[in-house]
Image (cartoon, rainbow, N blue to C red; front, side, top):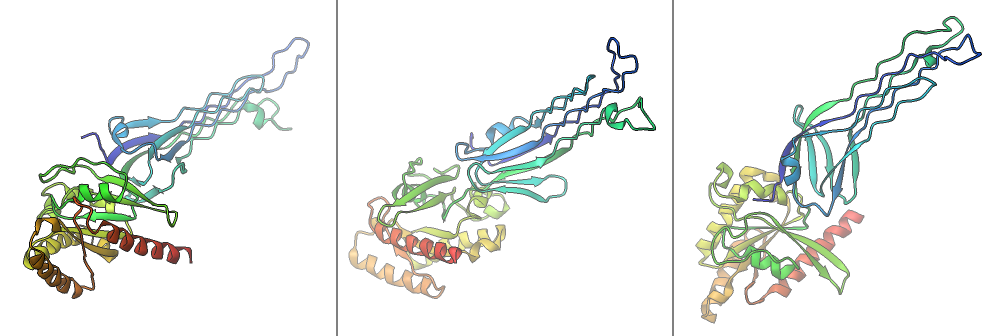
Length: 342
């Protein structure tokens, strides 16, 4: 699996260079004073987020990242060269946490965002710095200050306005392909989605965009390690809206599917369930009898009405109800954006 959303690496900032102990040795200048230069500063460790990177794969297999040490000072008051910084590029949405304390050091949510995590050590002062009226020939200098070392945990959490959740084979991959320009793998078997997919929908009429995240199906027992979905639930933690995608069936089947996914999410992080929620009943094309379909719609709607939810009925395969769903999502997202602006 080439998609990697967690990595543990060690980062090291550069050591400061040592200051020089030196004295002028020039012809016709018999009493040359001290001329030892300062050491250079060590390089910093900087993280930068980029939309061009979608996985932590490269970082997972390179465990140590070190900035350059500062150069030592030299005679003739020559300062040592400052060490080069190291810039570690990560996907947008990466959270950087200290492996030791568990503290969150950074949450990079914008493209091109940079943050210095470790500063390089300062260079030591050369003996020129210590010259004074009472000590005209200092024979000592400062060593450079050592850099810092830290083990950090990198966790990628996708940035999506809408997070699609549901049981395997509910049609999540098909739906995201209809809502956005994304083209995930689609096949008639469970766990087609093995990694999170991110799609972007652009509404030309209102000049608005929203992003949709599709994660692998969640099965009963996921919070205990079953299946794939629970591992990727962090990718919908940032989503403002949850989209429950449920395959149509009898009211009892639909309610069980909804409750199964809801319970597993609650076990993972109950805060996720405080988000806006939209229920979408998919695959209505499977019910050919129109009277039967109408009865199912009525019963299912009554069930969700008790939970203050109003389901949208669609067939992602046949594009039925997709425009209605887009309108519902846009209404929620635009309203949320207006609240944030205020």
